Length: 137
View 1 (spheres, helix red, strand yellow):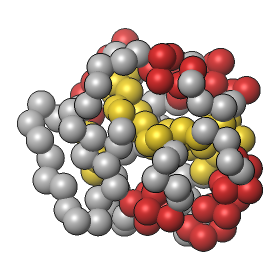
View 2 (cartoon, one colour; view 1 turned 60 degrees about the horizontal axis):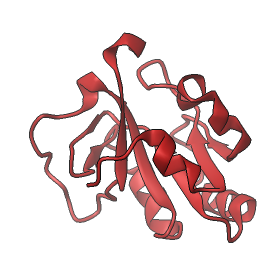
View 3 (cartoon, one colour; view 1 turned 90 degrees about the vertical axis):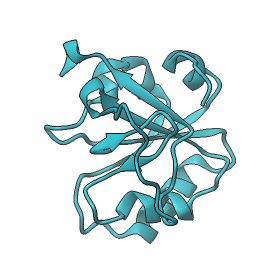
View 4 (cartoon, helix red, strand yellow; view 1 turned 180 degrees about the horizontal axis):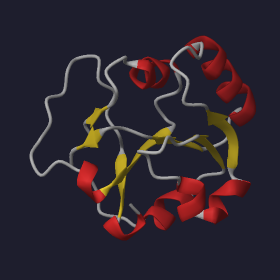
């Protein structure tokens, strides 16, 4: 995985999908307020959200624009493996949107594993992981 700043990666994208953070997740819009002008859809933290509705809403909002997706998780590693809450919602969502959409995991330093995580066949890897310093935790 290439070492680039979050700003460098995001600057080349026109459209973004974000998430509404829970208390345990970093809030990307608080950390990077300039993102608000690119975010066209926000995924709520509700397990019962219908994946196909969220995919269709995201596709309609972004059209053919170069798109990034900000993804929360419980734990990430440096190769882009992500472990969530165990229900597989984001893996199913990511498998249904265009692979060209860049996937950016967002986590606190304490959520970045120093060792590789087990990646199952259904796990959708991140292209980048944005690690938020502990000062923001």
